[in-house]
Length: 382
Image (cartoon, rainbow, N blue to C red; front, side, top):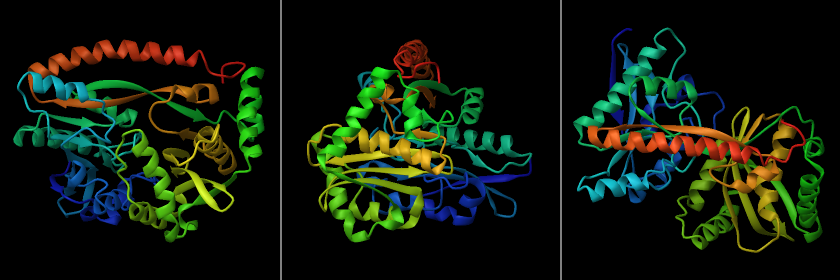
């Protein structure tokens, strides 16, 4: 492999649009020149909430960026979906320091995807290995406890495991288009009792008089975002969670990402009463942020699940990933899907203990996924 130099930059903007477009998946809503930059500038992924950009970039001898590893120094575990709260507690009990840690992933976004962004040439594997080695060196040189790669693509997982990283397992619930022509055909694959339940839920929304809008980011006036954001923020506050996104952040994401943001809005007359904010790639819809100020029966299912499925079918998307957690998704056709994250633990003893924990956890996660799959609503295996 030709000589390369790996360094860090403290903002996504420093990487440059041309490098993102050359190395990231085309049409991706999160891995691009805009998403991380906007989150960082609006402090959604900034020091005030525990994120400090430390993106690793690889350059060739001519100074061209040939590899990107989006990374952050994290001073807490909010919004990274690593699920390492107990690890931090164990460190504290043993008199060790867990934070800051190094995280490679997407802020507030539990979406699988490539993390070691390189081109497709003959040097691809060598570049990816060099980025891994550089991340591990950064942990050691800066006295960090650990490096975590959140929800990487399967090909990244294989390479990370070969470089001695541990693997954690989790379950998300994803909808896949199994050749359904429209929503009625999708629902027709359900057992009759499950089908009646979904129809009843959707009928409640029709009978309520609520009006559902489907709008892309560039179809929403910036002046609308304060009211839409309030729905999101109120719901986060209700459950004691941190509403990381500001109205101005949503507005800039909408204007910049355009059709890569998809927003489902429920209105009572002219007033927005609920919102579900999604993002899309060329083949996948990603469900992210829900909010409402009212109590409307079945509206969460309609905005967060059924409208998304209908959108995928209309626009030819093959997959809908509606976010982390949620066993209630199974009855609505979302299949339990195994997802993985990878971890380098610098302290050898802690690496051994956490590795034992993850080995025990894996069998429980696999059993849970198998049990959940037995409750899918389809008449036969989809």
